[in-house]
Length: 359
Image (cartoon, rainbow, N blue to C red; front, side, top):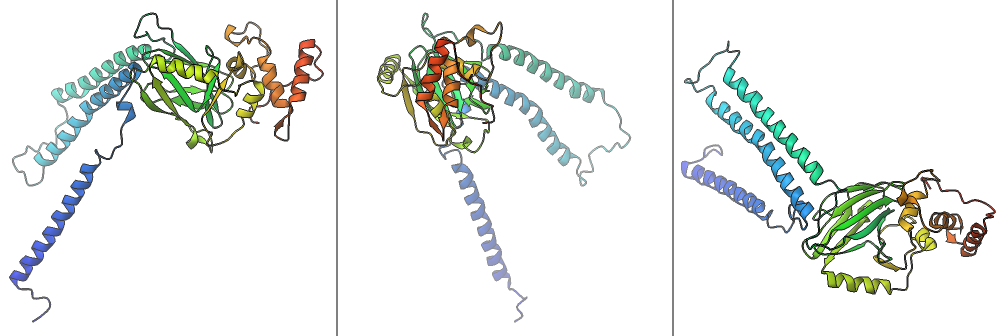
């Protein structure tokens, strides 16, 4: 018997086997796709824990719905036209000289106009409502906001609590249901401060100061990150935002104020040196005016400057002097103290010049 002559029963078995393999492959593919929603991955933007995040979630969903109003009809009509005007459908009207339809023109122009007007109104309202500079009303009346000064370093985050004179590295602690007033800047490279479950992303730039207001309505630990590429240590530039009760926050502040490490000008100059994988650290007795000194040290003296840049004491001079009193990467504290004494006497031997941003 020839190899090309296959009996009908054998052919049916081959077809059945081939069909079985195909159904098995489809079943496995469907099972794999079904496991995707159960993989444990969460969309943090769609799981907000604060009022700002909630409003941004609604904005995302509304924008998605508006886009689907255009996309879904186009997909459906494409399939309808494909089926209705197929070659084998002789009942379909064929009019090659067709040139105009008032009904189609009305639909084509009316729907985009409605969508553009709706988006314009929504963008106008949400732009003002979600302005990062706009303060947030507290849940309980009379609750003062917590002030946090954020400095983007290479490659770590420094959080300063000026009202408590404590600071942390790569760790942010906030009380629940309490507005938080952030002031942000950067030591050198531009970075983007972002806590997805709490709300807006804001860029931080050296020599400049910006603001952000957020609030957390649920206790928990949320991921924070830099969402703008800033060099080789970018992937390590993340932190945890711990939202606690007010009582736990007050206890944490007291514990932080009792740590032995202090954050003065020499400690800051050491901290600002680029490095990856920086561990969590806590500092007490933070130098007054440190944040404004970081902002103002690249600005130079300005007449009629902003009141926020007038730093008490010699914070800017201390930071610049500490940076200039380094020998072989180590801080010469005796030279720093000598410069400070000379400045106090009003006869500095060599004025400390601000460092270039590229250093």
